[in-house]
Image (cartoon, rainbow, N blue to C red; front, side, top):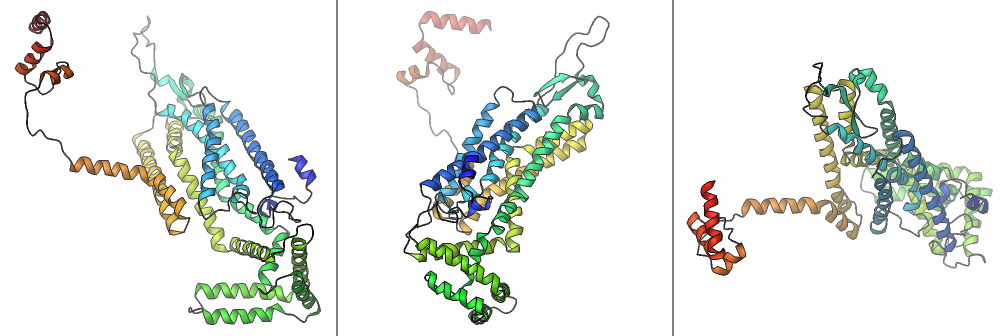
Length: 495
């Protein structure tokens, strides 16, 4: 990674992953797909982020859980399988930018899901596997008392050691402060996991998008979205830039005309969503048109990008592709700044994080652990709260899981991806409902009986469950030798 940063001085922040092609378009083809250098850049960034996440995972497990217990290394290896499973949606659904696109969601969101799949989920799975000792029975043995009359085994002296995943004798932990002191490492580790999950859901997605808004190329995309739509080459853009500098062109007047046309085209009144969007866009773009210096500089950068795209270094004749790409980025950046988008992203990510932790029974085991720390033997009210938490977390996880395919169909994730998600999430419950309906409707009853043939008796080896005693004896007489039948009869008489 250091060699890559030293080689490419234009890579300054994670926002350059969004503008993946680079300022000289050295990582993309004319169709804005990755070239060989682009795939090398993606490979370097991919390995760097995953290696860093894996190192943090090993560090947290060593400091928080004193290393792995036998068999737990499988959990860390399966985290890579989870990443491979995460790749499937990026190939199938219409919501994400796929591999090879200029802005690949799989690359730009890499820190977000690497923290989730490589750090948080494996640590949660290991912690939950050790917390299950709380639900296991404690030492339960009936030993004779000692010579002095004292019992050899006092169950109240044994407590669960979550760090080691077993029960051990600790008479001092009858007091609450001794229990908290003995479990301070697990308490700190649990708080760290909750804090990381909260930050990864609420802060990291918006922080990554903030890197885009602070990137210098954002002004270039804004210029592409605000200039008139009839430009086709660098020459027309230079005329616009010159007109902005000498004051002969005022984009604010043109935007007022666009606003009036859009208002006449819309059927809603002043409170309609379309009118609000048009008014907001006109206010923003009108202020941009009055700032002639900034507007001229932004258009100048757009002229340089068009000249670079059509120049000898790139040799791309079709400038329409460049225009569509710039307008696409302009629309995405505008959507990132909408208040509804900034309020929806944390809500969705938080719901998904709660669903994933609920499926691991994290909140149930955590509440059981808190009840053990506070009461050691939870009273009836605390046990009822733990049971209520178990039902609530299970219901919430099922609600998110079973509603996700419906969201995919409603919001247009694509036929292939929506079908795939429906089979994965709805297949099991549908089959269970079908089996339940079949068992409730169908019933098996005996319609008629007939004597068994010699071949059928031989296949049953004399084991006839519905035969009477006399018929069963007849079956034995046909299969067994007379001496064996006599011995069996004597044994039955003796019993």
